[in-house]
Amino acid sequence: MRVIQAFIKVIVDYPDYYCHSSLDSHKYYIYIEKVIYLLLSSIYRLNQLIMKDERIFNPENPILKVVVIFLFIIYSSLNLFAQENEPNNIAANANDFGLNSSITANIGTGGDAIDWFKISIPEEGTLKVISTSSECNDYYMKLVDVNTESQLSLAEVYPLGEVDSVYKTNLQAGTYYLKVYPFSTYNHGSYHLTNEFTPALLPNDTEPNNTAAEAIEFPMNSSTTGRLNYFYNTVGDNIDWYKITIPEEGTLKVISTSPDCGDYYIKLVDVNAEAQLSLAEIYPLGDVDSVYKTNLQAGTYYLQVYPFSVYNHGSYHLTSEFTPALLQNDAEPNNTAEEAIEFPMNSDTTGRINYVYNTVADNVDWYKITIPEEGTLKVASTSPDCGDYYIKLVDVNKESQLSLAEIYPLGDVDSVYKTNLQAGTYYLQVYPFSVYN
Picture 1 (cartoon, rainbow, N blue to C red):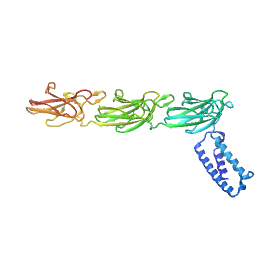
Picture 2 (cartoon, rainbow, N blue to C red; picture 1 turned 135 degrees about the horizontal axis):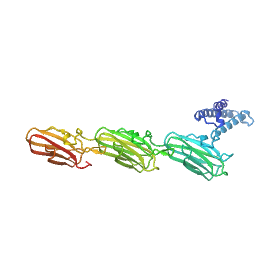
Picture 3 (cartoon, rainbow, N blue to C red; picture 1 turned 180 degrees about the vertical axis):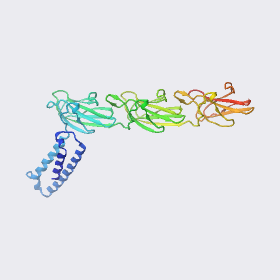
Picture 4 (cartoon, rainbow, N blue to C red; picture 1 turned 180 degrees about the horizontal axis):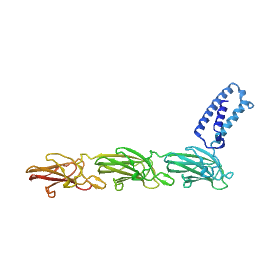
C-alpha cells in the first residue's frame, strides 16, 4: 500500500510527465528512487510471506495480481519517460535532451518525418551523440550549431543494428541541436540516442581577450590556463591575449604546454602591442616550449596565443618567469655626455646596459669624474651577466678617446686609465659589443 501511495504522489505532483511535457527531471527521479526503494522493500516482505505460506503464490490470489499489475505499471511508466515528446518536427519544438543521458524515439511513422532535440553544454568541450536502431535500417542524424542551421557533423546509421555517432570536438558553451530523419519514406521505426559531453581538460581563460586592448592581466612568476579555438555560431575563439608587467630590467620568459591541443603558437610582444620579441610553436602534443627576452626594460609586455590552423584546438597551460638583472641600475637618462651621471673619484657604482623598451635600446651610458689635480685616473669594470662590452675614457671635450677596454668574456675584469691628466672633469662611456650583448 505504501508503494501505491508513493506512485500516486508522483502522478499527482508530476501529471505532465504522462503528457510528455518537459519538467524538472531531477525532482522526478528523486520520487522514482523513493518508489523503487519502497517497491523493493515490499517485494522483500512479500517473499518472506511466500516462504511462510505458499498459498500466497497462488495465481488466483488477488494480492499477487495487484502486485504483478503494479510492477507492470512501474515498468511501463519508466519506459514511457524515456521517449521523445511530439511534436518535435522543427528546431523551435526540439525536445530537451539532458547532458550525458539517453533517449528512445520513433521516426518515419504517422507522418513523423523529422525529430529535433536540443542539448545544452555548460563549457568548452566535445559533444558526441551515439545512435543505433533495431527497427529502422537507414536514417541520418545531424549535429547542428546554435543557429539551428549550420551543420557540425552528419552520420548515416546504416545498416540495421549499426552503431554510429556525430560529434564536434571544439564547441563553446551553448545549446546545440540534433536532427534525426530517415533515409527515405520506406525507413521507419524506433531508435536509441545517447549523448556524451567531455569538457576541455584545463580551465578556461576569461573572455573576451581577443585583442591587445582586452588582454588579461598575467602576473609575473605565476601560472594560468586557457582554451583556444572553440567555436560558437561558426565563430572560433582563435586568439588569446595576456599582459605581463615587469618592474625593472631583466629577463621575461613564458613556458607553455597542452594536454589536448596538438599545435599552437605563443608570441611575446613588445609594449607597443605590435613588435614581436620572441615566437615559439608548441608542437607536437605534450611538447613544452617557451618564449623569452633577456633584455627588457620595466613595462607592460604582451603574450599572444593562437592555433597553427582551424583544426587545432584545446586547452593550454602558461607559466611566466621574471629574472631581474643582477646588479642595480644606473640613473636614467644618461645616454649623452650632457646627461652624464656624477661618478665620484675613488668610488663604486653599477649600471645596466642594452635593455630594450618599445624597440629602443638603452645602448650607451655616460658618467663624469672630476679630479682636483694632476694625476692618474683609472676605471676598472666587470659584469656577472653581460658577456661583451666596452668602457671608454673620454677627455674633457667629451670627444677625444683617452683609453679603451673590451670586457670579454663574461666575468673578465679590465680597466681604462690615463696616467698624466690635469685637474678637470673627464668622461666614461659604457656600451655593448653588439645588440645581442
